[in-house]
Amino acid sequence: MKYSTLTDKMNELRKAGYTEDFNLQQNCLECRNGDFKLFCDEFKVDC
Image (cartoon, rainbow, N blue to C red; front, side):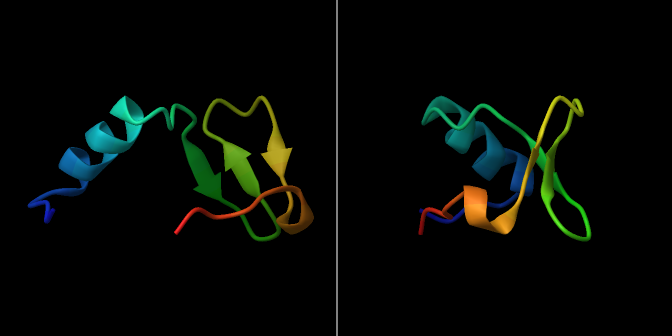
């Protein structure tokens, strides 16, 4: 399915159970609220 906006896709992902929101930092992904960071050896990207 194609989406006309990023918001549409983000809403679908939330409905599918992806509830955390991350920001890309120079050496990690950081949870938007700053509670934790994930480094490259700590996560896998779903395709």
